[in-house]
Each structure stands twice: as C-alpha cells, then as structure tokens.
View 1: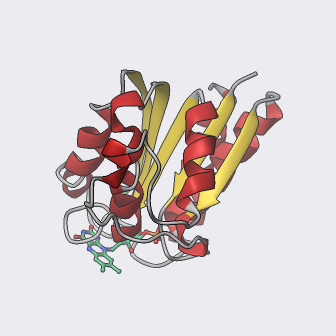
View 2: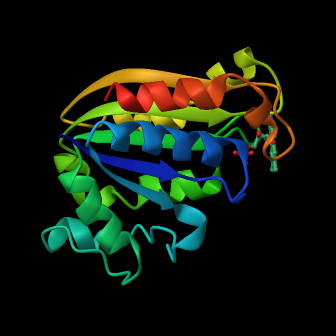
Length: 177
Ligand SMILES: Cc1cc2nc3c(=O)[nH]c(=O)nc-3n(C[C@H](O)[C@H](O)[C@H](O)COP(=O)(O)O)c2cc1C
C-alpha cells in the first residue's frame, strides 16, 4: 500500500486534467492504495512572499493558509502526481504557486515516485516544451523516479478527453502505482 498525493491544478472542475486525475485515483484506490486528490482551485493558497522567514525559523511559512496541510500530505506521500493544463506554453499559475510554496522544505523534498498528467489545446510537441517548471521542481527532490507521463493533446474544451482512450489509460496507470 502506497500513499498517493495528486495535485490537480486546473481551475476547471470538469476539465480534462481533473477527469484524468480522478481516473488515476480510482485506479490507485482499486489496488488498496491511500489516495489524496487536491484541487488547488478549491484551496486558499497565497503567493510566496520571498521573505525568507522559513529559511531562518526551521521551515515555517509566515502565511497561515491551506498550504500548511498540503505540505503535511506532501511529506507523507510515496507517490506524487503533478497535473496541469498548458497555459501559454507553461504550467498553470496554480501549479507554479504550489511549487513556490514548497520553499520552506525545498532542501527536504524527499523521495517520491512521480507522474505527470497534462492537458493542452494543441499537440504533443507543445506539451513537451511547456513542462520545464515541473521538471525544475522534481529535480529538487532528494530522490525521484518519473514513472509516467500522461498527455491529453488537442483537447481545448472541458471534458473532451472523456471521448478518448486516456481516462482508461489514467485508470491503469493508477492501478500500477
Ligand atoms: C489562459 C490559457 C492559456 C492557454 N494556453 C495554451 C497553450 O499555450 N497551448 C495549448 O496547447 N493550449 C493552451 N490552452 C488550452 C488549454 O491547455 C486546454 O483547454 C486544456 O485542455 C485545459 O486543461 P483542463 O481542461 O484540464 O483545464 C490555454 C488555455 C487557457 C485558459
């Protein structure tokens, strides 16, 4: 049994990446894993102030918001799923804010098995050139293995991915964690 944390960063509740995250969760749970799926859009998470207080006080952020409980979930997780839509050849602002707010523990990001779930209106090459911020975060982990990447390309409208084979792929990927 593994602990799985899914960070879903689309603002669209019925969006493509969110749907794939839900299927991944179902698959992982079907094998007895403990899964926590967090929609960042539903959380109160402020921007990093870059005050460096956390670097001087043992890793406590001055912002008292939902990132506290999310960091606790992060520390416990064996498996980390990072999910984002492509926005302007990059990741969502919500995902970047989450990443920046891991700063209090950036030297202790631990060991994780990592998956990416990404959706985009355009084609696969666009997705591949858009994920530098995810890679940059993951490279800061103490130990990691990128175990899977699921790309939903050509899905501009919310929910369009439901008509493809990708939800099933996400389910199977979740089953295999
Ligand atoms: C602000 C914004 C910027 C976007 N920029 C891009 C882009 O650069 N490339 C692309 O392929 N799609 C882009 N899209 C389309 C989304 O990536 C696409 O609709 C995707 O399926 C959204 O994921 P979601 O359904 O999980 O929210 C953009 C959408 C928005 C709202």
